[in-house]
Amino acid sequence: MRIAILGAGALGGLIGFYLARVADVVLVDTWEAHVAAIKAHGLICEYAGQTEARSVCAVSEPHHVAPVPIALVLVKAHQTAWAARVAAQLLTPDGVAYTLQNGLGNYDMLAASLGAARVGQGVTTLGATLLGPGRVRLAGLGPTTLGSVPEAQRAAALAEQFSASGLATSVSTEIEGLIWGKLLVNVGINALTALLRVPNGALATSPEARQLLEAVVCEAAAVAAAKGLTLPYADPVAHTLAVAQATASNQSSMLQDILRGSPSEINTINGAIVREGERLGLPTPLNAMLTKLVLALEAL
Image (cartoon, rainbow, N blue to C red; front, top):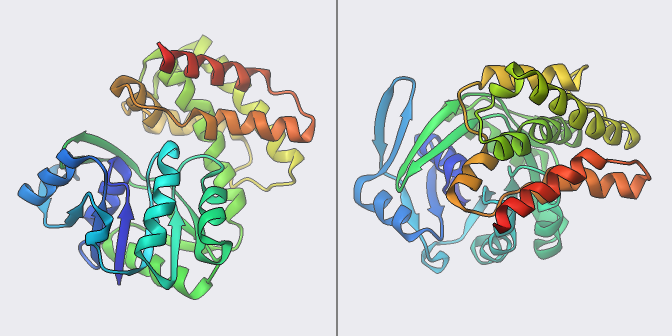
């Protein structure tokens, strides 16, 4: 299977590294130093106590890439419009773009550009860290799930490729509940770690931080319940705390963004809860405050 990965950062690079074992993969990224390093030395990944360089095709100009049937969208939210344009160039006429991005709103932007029949959604619990140009680290293995829409057979074939590469993946007809399940975890962890400048585990060990996490997750869970969604766990707060503890030494993707001086995904995570709450008539003051604080931090 020929697959283009749009966005070869932490998660895109990690998935590309694994998929290159079993598929014809091309990484498309605008960071020229990253692309140059991959071309010169291969894509280097630290995983399972070892470091390995793997030869993977990488380009910064998408017009160099032959048409592909599958594009995985793994850019940050503020780059989704770019990814939509690139996917329109790269996909075969019947090709499909699958977004595995964090938060809400990315699918809608891709579907508005490509058409809903050419866009799929997925959710992954993989953890990854971008170490520098051409270098990524596996921060945690976890399952990936692809939605059966728009085409169950193609989703199953892609899931098979993921699993064959070592990344356990399945297909589900209930992808929205899984997406919201991950969203609530990001709502509880990302903004707080970015603002406090702490690794994930600190949110579970500090009583004050833990109380904030509980309150912000409960707000988001109320919105999910009002939407009639079934989450993949019974207790959102307990699950989010368990994730924070299991990834105690990890820096969240939003903290990594803030430390790099890059735009965060706050508007598609906590900001998305605020927008959905407003639509449903539910107050979400804590999520609104966290959104404003992170945006203020970005502006400094």
